[in-house]
Length: 200
Image 1 (cartoon, rainbow, N blue to C red):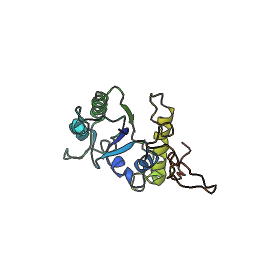
Image 2: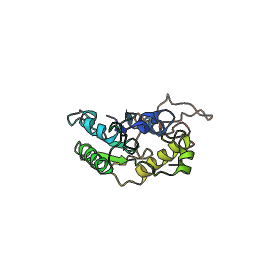
Image 3: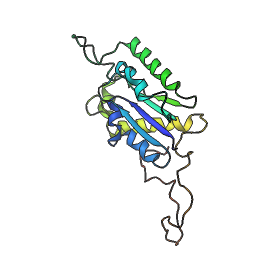
Image 4: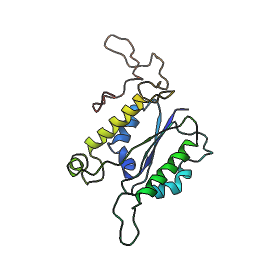
């Protein structure tokens, strides 16, 4: 079976497949791993903790090799006077994230986790990387993609989960491969469509 990478988080994850960092990962890993989207816009860490065992059941026939988690943007919104809304106090947020990590790590000794943190509040930077003050622009998505790819490249994990180190499925040479100008077949199983966003 192909390795499975699960993206788990709020809208930064849910919308990541719309010309975002999730789409970039799906593109680069197209013949190497299945990128599974578990994004839930508007969610906070409290709500995620309530369902983490359903999103990642212990008895699943296959556990992911990698989980990328992002919650925190909604948690950090101001507390509404009604007491409703997504705000979660910082200490509870930290504990929720610890519990989410503990559950995911309990699924397999081989599972790897990358946590994306919420960016610091910096009004000038927010203008560059977000159209609405919350969600990422193309430039912001490129930064996240590059950071994830760098982490995967630099991680001392066995086996490596960096896309260039992973074998492609059905990568053997074939007489059905495209023919080059020199009338030779060219195996393109490791050649993703040009990705101008990163040298990673």
